Length: 445
Image (tube, rainbow, N blue to C red; front, side):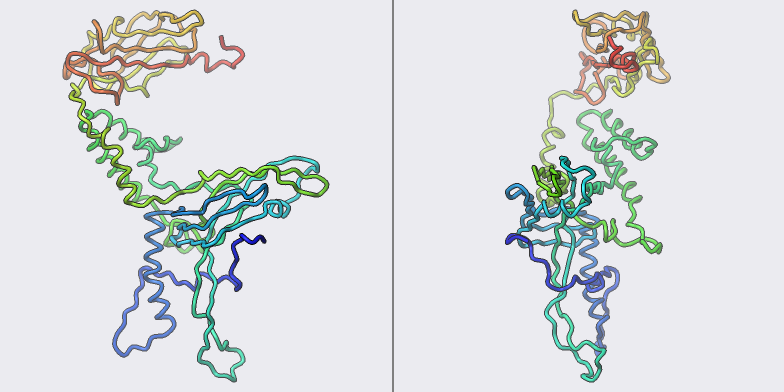
């Protein structure tokens, strides 16, 4: 142990029963009532439990300040003083610098399979709750009763224990999947009805004119957040008796501080630390509410800016619907609003591809529009050969595609800038050749 190492409690750690947690049970006091130990524990456990419940569910685990991780010399891992909140809402305060000799830590792991080898050891640096009793005081007891303790601890010191675990860091707790998909923070998973619902809501928002999107996004945010919250559940009771009060169990409550990678050389039974890499992005930082308020104002210019143009309501191409059939002879895409069928012609669509000599115009026979499904189908004269393909659907120029209600030109891609009654925007997409994706790399042209 170095001089910088955090000093542990001299006494044994207290158990969780020494710090009662009962957020929904309060003490009712009446005149003349005789109060005992259990009454005082009830009085303690009510405000403590409420604070833990609030912090665990409404803030989540993370670092509030400090806990800066560094490497002292070659092999000493350090952590500064800091404050964090764990998975069950307890504050984890460390008031001194913590230090760990990584050579001793690596030596204590399982020996390597081969001597005279270089390997990388992975660890996860965490901070977790600890406490110890202190300040013993005399208690009332029969001095002849040898089985009864004559003094009891009257204080409990809450502290934090930092340790390096030989394991990968656990995944972060990320509730509100629908909201995350809506805001583009998560993708839709396989067999994911909730994610698909949020993806559809995202598209519904971008169909609104720019001036209405902020209000539409807020409506969808509230609707999807309500569904996500309704599906949240506390961690199951390990005893099989329903649920606990908190999102995680006690053994999963530690706060991740960093991922650690240690390059080690083993030679003749000796372990040499070559290099230490620390990745602090594995931690979660808890940002104050006032800072969050100011950060959200950073979006205001994009939401409230008036470009001087109102969207005329022209149809738009939905990028996610653009695709080929299996043999790349048909290219289809969908639009957001009905079209004037006569404007959907060969002159309103262009398909090019990029060869080593330059751009090539891909020939196609005709363009069809299905008004029932709002789908446009381009029938190719031949399958494209080059890997990079460019699709242009015209909303500008002499022969743009027009919408039928209102009768205005194509406004470009869904989510793009506003179009006017006089001029829209071309919808331009770069597509990979599906035939190349099906071939092994060495067989591609």
